[in-house]
Image (cartoon, rainbow, N blue to C red; front, side, top):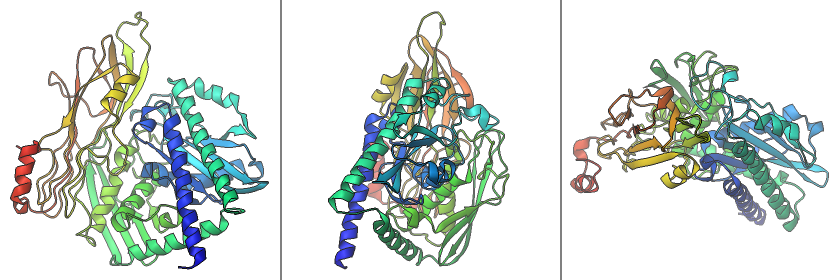
Length: 536
């Protein structure tokens, strides 16, 4: 390795440290628990053409991989001639951002002297964006909340107070939402300052040479990782619960010398409810699945994402078009990873795990006083919960772990601090992992209720209740999920419902599928499962 290569590698590591500090700034300044507790965010640095050079390790693939395409939209819509030092831009447009209105993406240009040398961008999920609230019931995106086109949050350092006022007057939790947007702008500013310090320290005029080095090395490593996969076409289908009817997800995955292409023709038609998925979000989780299977240590940037492409006809559920409803696009979008892994498993049987719980079981509730005259304030709350992952070819699945989203579960204590909620129980769900030579990860049981004086208006968005995670290579399916009240009353798994005062909602999260013949599980692991309470 030449001296220049060593220098560029050091600069690359330094750049990753810059974006990590950018992300940590957002976590420290965020108002919403989904950001500061769960890490539902992304952060990255981009070149002047809008190509992602480096991303923070902290974050989710749905945010990072969609944000990677978003900065180009900012450049086009703002116009290169209107990009100034001190500017801050934002949007939550589902088709130019991350797939639904609840994610705010903020982009900040970086100038060195008078020269534009790049951008920092970040994304976070906000607790409320107005409209019907976070749930699948809307029939058009217009009902789902405030839609902000690509606009200037600040110009030449001057805050756009008109836009702030529009946001404040169209959301239920104004302080949280506006505070989170300021947090996004602050984290980009941290990145901007640290980058300029880095350039001054090493006497660099811009990021051009470093970006070229990063892209060249990453592209070569990505194609090398694809090399051992036999070229050809692989197919897979998956049936999941959907809203009112089961949904079929289908993929035809083509492996070539220069990359992989996923075509989603054959997937179910669009839903009339907000479970539809913009194709950029489907692409994010396809790409993520392929990278973790083939090159889990590879850094994520423009060059590692470029070889993975997607297509789908209009009218299918994985290619939602404006103004289709998309509020809970994660419910089906998270299944794209297992869908595509299931296809490539034919070429990589010793790499690909069994199916897992997939989509997060988000608990989004509007707490309202049972007595309107009580003076108790309304509160919006969001809590993430995860089922089990699929067993791997050589290891058991992970219990109560978010895959592929990667978000962390908020603690019960943090959840109870933000609003009138009591978490009565949160425990591993015995027997929920699919049997196999390697056992599927277990789900969990969560029992929650409104605090005294409140009831919940609650948007259900749960899946894998009718269609559990499938085992692989002879492994058994994971346990399906279940939702009911503490008196045994079944509870709908999609749409806005009410948890009455005095009642508790019980969520039994699904487990992951098993891998391999259960008869081949070693006796020591069987005994440990019983001792730990994982199985009877």
